Image (tube, rainbow, N blue to C red; front, side, top):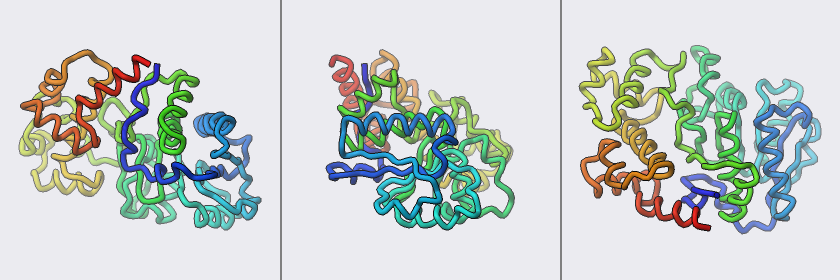
Length: 315
């Protein structure tokens, strides 16, 4: 059974490729050295390409970068690109219409200044590698982030979600659902879903911010007031707002709302609770309030989400 693949594109740029005569995905570097998660993504895309001539995939050695005349989507995965290969990598980056950075490649984006002012999905374990004075970037706890032609993914199992979302935008819901079934994936996470079930604690976050996030995640049903969160975290409300802007690029209230809605979305997909029950369990005072907030963030209503899931499961 496939579920959840008919949602909106969620702000991704790839839906613009839908209907293209040909889409070329390039993975520079030694094909034999692909890490397991990127190798899985490559396999998924290659399998889709066997039945859809629109899609072609190349694992191109960096030294042959000039041979790639058309690069629609470039997938970066190298942790520390070879300095000798940097000019070739640079040429590929400039030539590509869209760029996807996975795992430690996001560090490369940050250190080369490409992520300055950008919200990026850096794996939470890699954030500790960032040193003081690194080019500015907004670290996101999400599994995938889109910013213009750039997409960042934390890596690991999230590449499965990334690949299926990409195939949905490129080839359509049916093709993505078929691949979802082939890889025995029961549920495709949304890009905004968190990397961790617990608060995204890491050395990159000050203790007060980590505490504030933990308080939010522990109080979804009865949301705390911002003043109470700040007091319990040992800082002022103004400091709380500054930390959220600096490290997450958003306001505390917005982050709290997105946590509650993400929890609601999982419950809609995975539980049999009524929508009103879910609304109340996620801190919303009424069904209409819940529906309005849900539509604002996800582009669809809770009722429409539940109906799509039921319709997909009946097929």
